[in-house]
Image (tube, rainbow over the protein chains, first blue to last red):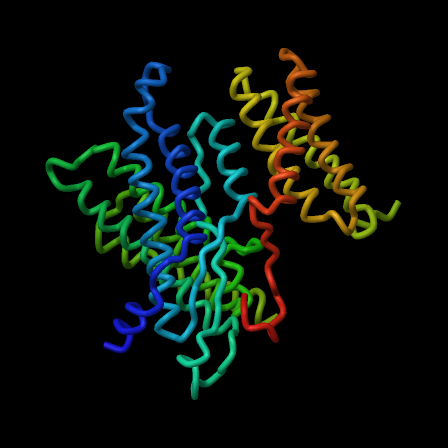
Length: 244
Length: 117
């Protein structure tokens, strides 16, 4: 109930964030639309795929940002969304150069603001790496779960082989994988700075999940394999790096 | 010869971006796509130059010029004058948009004592 109350009070996006989200979704929608196998190279053929592509990009990015926003309110922070101009330009250029075969989709920058009233009496009162990694982890996890849900759907009779569902899966996996890279302003960097061991586990877990869902290994295998890969990554990092 | 990356980072970045520009240009076989890519690159160059207007100004001009030279070398079958003109125009446009405040300049605050990350 307390979380619902916080969401009611603080969840709404301001106009700057809405503009940033709109531009991000439009650019990623364009990138997704380039990746469809249109057949004939005409503007009319391509424009048929533009609206579904925008919807796919909107779904993936809004889920990601909304989960981070809600999870950060749970611990007394407000996550603000900002555009990452360089990443957007790089993604667009990469998509043009590869004719839509490779797409690099990473949501923008997440900035955290402390809501002082909601943090009173909390252990580690201020903003710190240890706390901010949780909302970011859940944001990435939400994309993995969405991809898994659509993967399950893609194996059901009528939806099998539907190119739109395949795109939803690929876009969500792309967001989950690339967000976890420890690059400046990427979400992986926050987790990396909080603890390298936790990062080794989380990155292996997400990479394993992306691989299992992409290869369509089945529901239970897609849950078990990431955990096995995650624990293996954690153990390898512990033995090869931390204990040396 | 011992290489000091910290002292010569501008030269390394210039060569790296020259190679990236060259590779991008040779993979594009369409003038419209060429212009689209160089326009986007110009917008980013304007942002980069505006963000660094007070420090390392020359080094960033060098890096941006390196990219343009690499790109022009790679786009041998198209008009290089048009490509250079589009790049310069989009860079100036982006710089002007940043200067007028139409596009926000975001510099992350990494100071843990400030309560905004």
